[in-house]
Amino acid sequence: MTDSATTAAVVQAPAMIRMRNLYWVFGALVVMATAIISQHLWFLNFVHVFAGLLWTGTDLFMGFVLGPILRRLDLPTRRAVLGRLMPRTLFYLPTLAMVTTTSGWYLARQMGFLNVPYPYYWWLIASYVIVGILTVQGFGILLPINLRVNFELQKEVPDPGKIQRLMRTYIGVVAAQGVMQVAIVIVMSRIATGM
Image (cartoon, rainbow, N blue to C red; front, side, top):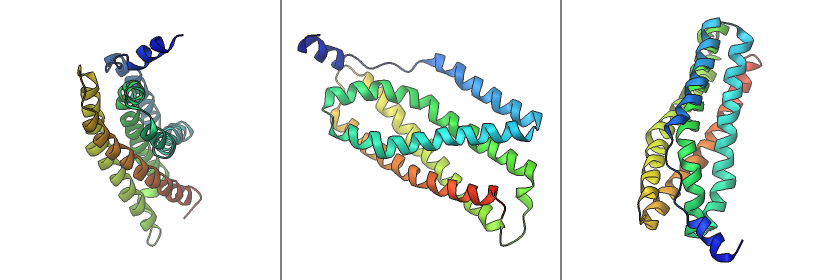
């Protein structure tokens, strides 16, 4: 491939948001609903833990590995990467957040963790606070930024300064989510091993 062909491939317009991604979102929600309705403890625990691992791993990877790399890329390369990444995370991360938290609630209820006595109840309060922060960050900050970056990237001439400002905030919040994810893993480990 020649240098001009490589440059043309990198500068190529980013991918659009594809609504067909809703099929696998729907599939994940069906699996979660099936696990909840079945009241099969192993299946519900598997759905909760697997979705939580994917969510935590993605947040840690994006916040501490991908974020610093993206900051050092030139604009055309960054635009190409973000144009492929952001439309997918628009569906992927909210779905994982919904499946993890909803299945976690039902799992805690089924296992009797919602009625634990003091002082162990504080571990549950800690999990509620952390999940609340993650939810507000995810749906109140990251999702709107994701949409704004996607729409900006679709413009004929995107504003690189605007994208850079939005992505700086996005990566910072994702890094904060990574820290919160580690905290929730600590709390969940404590709850799972018996308070």
